[in-house]
Image (tube, rainbow, N blue to C red):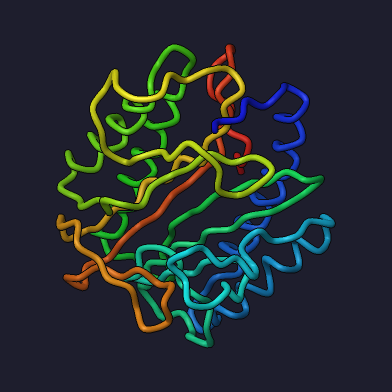
Length: 255
């Protein structure tokens, strides 16, 4: 069931979203050659702690996972697409990093992700990240009252496929509210004019995930969480929590 949020609830979700935005900004600022993924997780924990927020990631265990998630960020490097577990791996010059973070504040959740490079960027990585950001922007622009879910999916997919990038078939965005993952699912590819009608009060986590090699195939790493490209090509992940309102889409996790 899709829950429509009140305007008051959307304001509360904005507060949670701003904590997420601050955490991601702090993590990106701290990311440098020689810094470990565990150190980046500690940076995010500090932001959550200072805000009096908790993490919806820490201890999360969906049906596909064999163990609860052990961190407050997902840190996915190079050929890891999403759900990377922070480890002692120290960032290297030219790494492409995707960080996903959530916050629970006042009973409401926020969820957002960014991708960036460390040190000297590869031109192909710059293009991949720009495409991911453009796909996210296109999905947000389509998140208006009167459109349908297929319009969001089509907008995202058009940018991704137009750039020659691959898309994970069975992972995408989701509704969000009291819980991090709620109905409805938000696909990253679809047909315009199809699917659920978008209404004022819907809040969605819109999140394109792009595979540089152009194929859609991926696999789970031995840790049971990290999803990696089959061809070893790099990936980028962007995400915002977005409220659909009569005044237009409102990005609750804007940084």
